[in-house]
Length: 301
Image 1 (cartoon, rainbow, N blue to C red):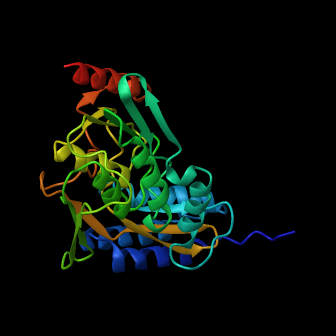
Image 2 (image 1 turned 60 degrees about the vertical axis):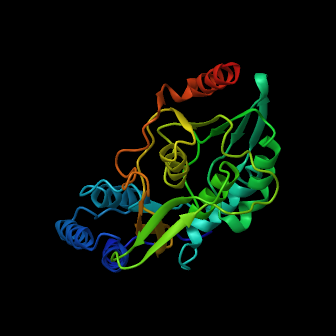
């Protein structure tokens, strides 16, 4: 029988505060949050025996200053590797294997309208390029396309650019990422060539959103919306625009710290805190029917 790992809050808080100070994309906020965590520790706010409860308490404090939903102390029921990012990567791999590589549904609706569901994540491109290419190539012959992101909780920005490449006709600047300290930036562009066939940049395109759509999935919706390429149908998304990295700070706890911020070249801003606002607001459960009707009307017109 495995003996549970004893929870000592102080080392967890100390390491989380250190990671904030060294890596958080907003240094001034990092200092403020590190001080808050240490003060709460001294006050006894984290004197709990349960790692899941500590994760809940610390996450609430981490998000109390600027509402950054990527800033978390995540609880994992099974012990996780101390290697950086291992906890998140192991969980992603299980989801990848059980979701046909993140493209669990390709369907042809009436009127030549295709649906490609991308869920539960946009997985690392070294895993996902083949299933994404297969799904998007299969849908490329449709008269109109609906990309369903309602159950997508984020993932790899490179996968965002890869998907966009199938939905545009030419190489396009999608996003710019500014990393910790603001001294280094990195642009994201769609690809000049893709495996398989493109749907292209002229046929009707709709993106479905919900209040569960998050992070890289929001970027996909936002990039296409800002380019005027897609109509977003559904609910406002969760509002997380900061890419993050994860560090194991306890056998069952992982600190996730945003290390960059996204700036869209069209809007000059991003969706942090506000979410992607749909062009056609409706309940997420009704968004597929709405988008299908819009597509049929446009094709008929």
